[in-house]
Amino acid sequence: MDIKILHIDSNHPLLWDQLQQSGFINHSDFSSSKEDIEAKIQDYQGIVIRSRFKIDKEFLDKATHLQFVARIGAGLESIDCDYAASKNITLIAAPEGNRNAVAEHTLGMILSLFNKLNEADGEIRSGHWNRESNRGHELDGKTVGIIGYGNMGKSFAKKLRGFDVEVLCYDIQENVGDANAKQVSLAEFQQKVDVVSLHIPWTPETDKMVDSDFINEFSKPFWIINTSRGKNIVTADLVSAIQSGKILGAGLDVLEYEKLSFEILFTDKNTPEAFQFLLKAKNVILTPHIAGWTFESHERLAQVIVDKIKMKYFGQAKAVEPEKRVTGIGGFFFKSNNPKELVAWYGKHLGLKTDDFGSTFWWKDNEGNDCSTQWSPFAADTTYFAPSERPFMQNFRVENLERLLQKLSDEGVTIVGDVQTYEYGKFGWILDVEGNKIELWEPMDATFQ
Image (cartoon, rainbow, N blue to C red; front, side, top):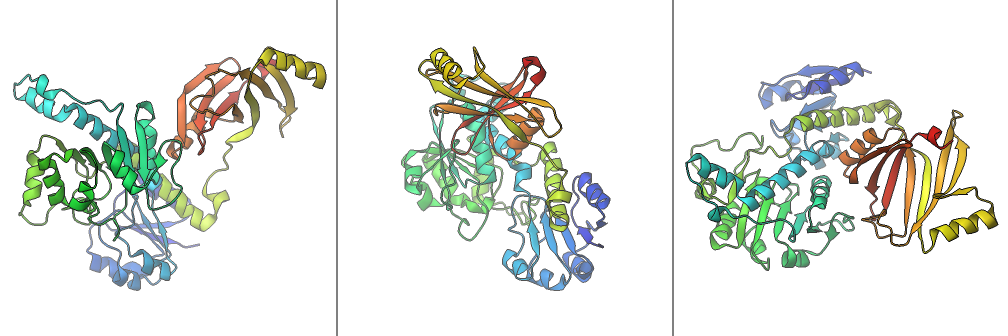
């Protein structure tokens, strides 16, 4: 298999190295014009880009042997997706790679706006000690609204679990809400929220979505955060709303005036009047499209792209090493009105070998190792199953708890609490999509024998 890949943007070195180790042929060209790239693209089966230029119909027509386009990022708006699909070209993106970075940046912007951190810092540096004018707001008790509940939106909602907030989401897709955010209609969303966070792509439907009409439908003043795409907000309308007090503050990692590369703000020297206002506004935070631009996401984005390219050519078995997650049922726990009496009943009538915790069942895995599964009734008023309100909790045996929790976190799964370690193993907790609490156990079975 001779698959030649042209890299036209620099990326984390693991991308190049792992593709080479897998047998792909890497070439790079970080400086040639689009026309020069088009002149040689017929020699390649794959191309890896960030946002250097648009992969349009003209480009794709000249890429006569192209099998995939991989973009190191979340969105594909710089690619003519429909035309690529018509030519059976696989499109690869990596929204999983920087969703955690975007979520943390979004939360940081909100907390900075609420507590006037940037403003207060500037005043101190100028020799002013103003306490009353820098009195802040608390996030607790507010309603946070997320528009676009995909990878980024779900990751941000997860970050909010440590706050006493109501989280609502609005999305054009149905049934995307989960234990971290309640999906509502746009009308209910605009009626209730105090903070709006945008996590949507730039499409014909979302272009200039946040305009005066959209803003004025909100029933109360609100803060707004945009870490998605700048052209989703009409800046002049945003400024008008800030001036009128309808919008209390804004955190903007992206701007309407950005060029396609996302790394250039203006190609001329004319600064729009609305942008001039944003530059001076004390209740506005601006960052240069870096919400997903962390050292960790730089590596993670590259790894996701590598894995997806390998998946295309080798399939699941060869794309990633076989991975063990759950290795067995560790236990079944449920609420009982009288746990001791119930345990005694099961011991007497069903012959279970019982103890203070219930009953332990022993079995052997495929390698012949002794393994255990626990059956345990809990008191009816136990809080051990919280935040789930269900009368039961599952326990699954896992091979490597901390590694699994990191993978689950990267996949947007809600982690509950911190890892706890005892002589009989390590424990961690997650919530499934319906809010059921699941206990994950990396066991030390020998301690029970």
